Image (cartoon, rainbow, N blue to C red; front, side, top):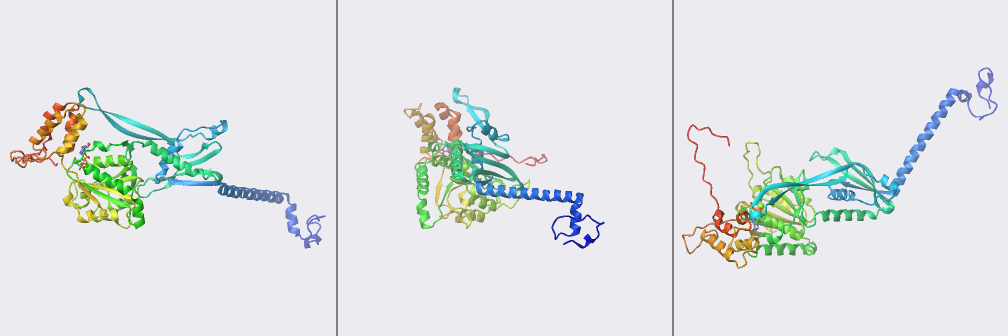
Amino acid sequence: MLGPNASHPSSAPTPTSGPTTSSPLLNTLFSNPVFAGGFGLASLGAAVSLGRRGFMATTSLLRRQLLVHVEISKSDPSYHWVLQWLAQPRDPGGFVASRLTRMRNLAVKTTTSSVGGYNGVGGRQDISKTTHADFRVQPGYGRYLVRHKPGVYIGVNREKASTAVTATGEPHETLTLTLLWMHRHLLSDVFTEAHSLAQSFNQGRTVVYTARNMSWQVLGKPRMKRPLGSVILDEGIKESIVADVKEFIGAQQWYTERGVPYRRGYLLYGPPGTGKTSFIQALAGELDYGVAMVNLSERGVTDDLLAHLLTQLPERSILLLEDVDAAMINRRQRDSDGYSGSTVTASGLLNALDGLAAGEDRIAFLTTNHIDQLDPALIRPGRVDMMMRIGEATRYQAAQMWDRYYGEMDTDHAGRDRFLKRLHELGLFGGDSQDPSVPKRHTSTAAIQGLFQFNKGDMEGAINMAEGLIPRTFEPEPPAPDGAIKSPA
Ligand SMILES: Nc1ncnc2c1ncn2[C@@H]1O[C@H](COP(=O)(O)OP(=O)(O)OP(=O)(O)O)[C@@H](O)[C@H]1O
Ligand SMILES: [Mg+2]
């Protein structure tokens, strides 16, 4: 049927064929070459865009179906392990594979350490130090393809987010690994390999973590393990602590079965320079643990930070809280630079140790030089299960230390006996209760170490200089005369 306009032959040519339902207006439009061309283009555009969307939807579906992504946040310990693992040299494969897997953006991680030395001759200490730098190349930011095994490729995307971790102001970083779905079982191998690689870097070394930017970070280069035998405590002390820690480590099942938090705390107290910190470091080495260290007298350590840190201790590490007495004194007075002292409070410390939010699975060592200033609540079981006084040097320790330094040359122990006799005469073992003329004094193992190091290989020198072990007392400064200009210090 023709439309109404068909009755006006002059207005438009009469179509000879076409849909019988189409209106004459449409016919007119379609017969207009400009409109028809435009419409054609528009439909082509729509078809292309539809096709593109369809293609993208299909590829994204395929990607989702065929690929598996693993996102690792920078705050996760495995982040650095995997980065190190990715930087390992690997077989590049054939021509195409080697071109595809080229890593063009690399980043360098540098750690430096000072290496002091002895000049050897005469055994005197040499003050010269060299700085040792260790450079490790890692993948930089961007996307890479890594050939894991023949036929197995891993897509890597290391990116820095635009949002910052609010507490530190540092941008958040992620590392995304992409594998074919059928290769997903290899992911566990990747993480296991990365972990053992990280451990092999630290073989024979003790990793020390410290609190920085609200999280635990490795402090410098992992240091050589300190042998337990190099720390000389009074008879039996070392052995009893080591036995207790080892028993605790072996008793995890016992704690789990009884629903008791798997935690143990030790408090080492005593005067400075008696080997508390050295012993904990050596113990960590013996157990193949790291040391996660917080100094409570350090600036910026707050209750919140402490609680937060204790909930996420690095794996296999001993928590070391140094100077716990600092938390007991809440200094109100500000220093000249506005510093108002430690901001960890006694209750903050107690809660961090065994409050509701306290982490499970922990060995904690607390140290102090001022046991008398500690809150008795700190010393109750659950927080501190074992307390040990690490005291001034005893005759036993002095003899043991002598043997470590001069044992090889003093085979008949004659030198050691003279040294011990000299220390006794000087009253350095607490004096002689029978003879009131012998002064009652003490010295520290650190001082004895200093004497022996100064007289390396020189027994006579050590004996002659033993007087230097007498603790020095410093005279108070005479009051400034009237009218003198007083310095601000
Ligand atoms: N008992 C010891 N055996 C071996 N070395 C020791 C001993 N005591 C101290 N030293 C040496 O003295 C130095 C200081 O020791 P350390 O830092 O362990 O003392 P500390 O008890 O932790 O002191 P502080 O209470 O001041 O922190 C170290 O170089 C350490 O090797
Ligand atoms: Mg110490």
